[in-house]
Image 1: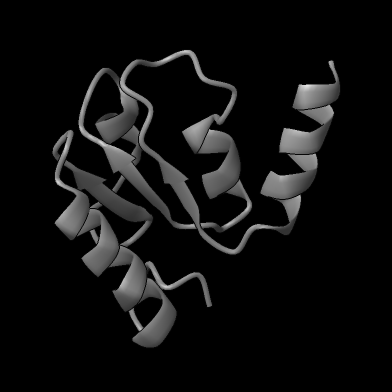
Image 2 (image 1 turned 90 degrees about the horizontal axis):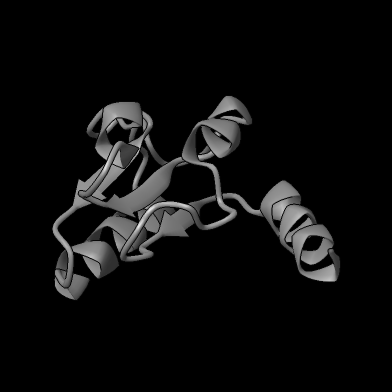
Length: 86
């Protein structure tokens, strides 16, 4: 229970979210954070990509493509785009 409370507090204060778990079921719910207007960088797998509009609500990436994850995070923090969180 403590983990969930800490995770919820972190998600509330987050400006951007990275969801790179290798399988669905982790406590981070992509639609919930998007409802708060937070862009998501998430791996392409399961149903997660169905919730992400490329460049608008976030960026789906291939599993293991850490370079692309880093590029999207850099862009979200330094450029004005729809998925910048600002």
